[in-house]
Length: 314
Image (cartoon, rainbow, N blue to C red; front, side, top):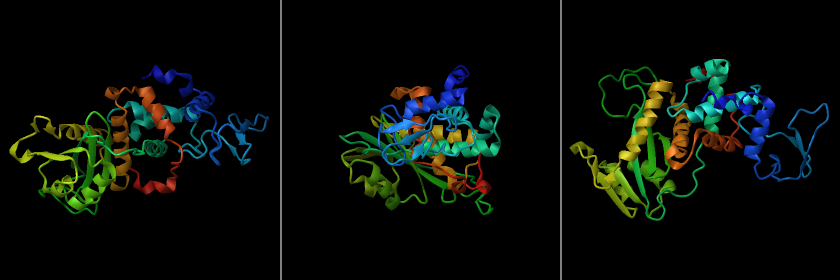
């Protein structure tokens, strides 16, 4: 990774801007104000900073960072690109403390940069999962301190996940994952998530929980494994894929981030979804993964007000 970070776009702000332009504007410069493609000219006077353009259609000025998570940032653009690459290349994530040390910025800055980059990683969904008879595995998991609630009430010895944060993940075999931080895990709440994301002609795989019984009837097939009887696979019937994803997610949350506030959990989940959906087995390398993240920075500007200082968590 050190050799990669020696590339020009990671060492020089102007080279970083040129690289970002080549990624975001591969098919021509796009005005972020009116959406016009190619109808612009560069402002090259001594009073103009490099990379400043003016749109001939709406007459507004812009740079490649306008309307993105990088807009109005005082951090040099090549430092931003380093952060994007580090987060994209770290399978279990990288903490803000580690970014602080590697980038030479303050912890507050590293934390805020991390959350901006997670916004760029947000899944834009696309079509329904399992279309054409594909197999989709669905499962839920729980995250949080099993001994302490957010209001300080002790929960030691209490079983179940009612006092924890709930995450529901949908994984298409051989494909991607979509995960959601939900307030409750019920048949009704799961049906809402599944209706919006899974094709009705998909083959559904879940565990034996009764919460899947009613929504499962709406799919081409619904097969289950009975974990209470130590059954984890019956031929092609298994939820091992989604459980494998949960293993990666939890190892990252526990080992890298340690404490993740409920108000930020969806962003962390988005980060792990993004890396899973651009994993090596699907043909992506670290550089391509980072390029996809950079393509997602538009229209997702996150201000410090959106992630208040008093709520900072790794």
